[in-house]
Length: 193
Ligand code: GLN
Image 1: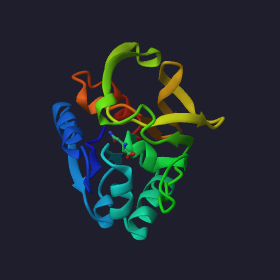
Image 2 (image 1 turned 90 degrees about the horizontal axis):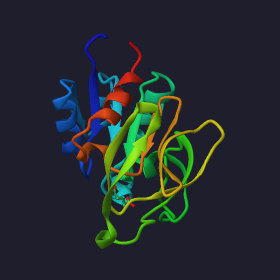
Image 3 (image 1 turned 60 degrees about the vertical axis):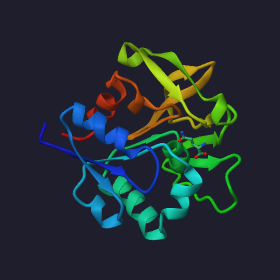
Image 4 (image 1 turned 30 degrees about the vertical axis):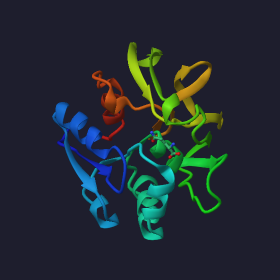
């Protein structure tokens, strides 16, 4: 595959952990703070953090550029935790001004597992990738509904925690905090060669 460069949205939150994970996989990455910086990346990661803050910091032009990069240029997008909220079609308990991008047909509920103190880690199975992975949940959202075209790749306590629709991948946990890079590798496989 030709060399690819992955953009990581760097407005707020845990973007550096994704940059480190990509570095460990020997993949070039770039922190994206302005919409025009999306032009020379072939994939985009929206990290965890605080979805309301990321939302506030994203201009309409930025939103438009992300949607177009996916819909017109076909670049895959991976959202973790707050990133999943940003990409969802509907937020159950979002702020009234939160405008999710609607790039994946899921309904999501913010802070579903409780407060910061209720954050936890566990081991989940990803059958299609043939592996177990340590999954860290930090004030994670819950995917409460998925549309007919959305594939569930992993679940925890009967709720989907890793789902995909076309080239949009979403997790409610933080694969970038695991030593197992399998989810990032899978995401990179969605980039057209
Ligand atoms: N609770 C955060 C939110 O609503 C998400 C937490 C995270 O990304 N770890 O945006």
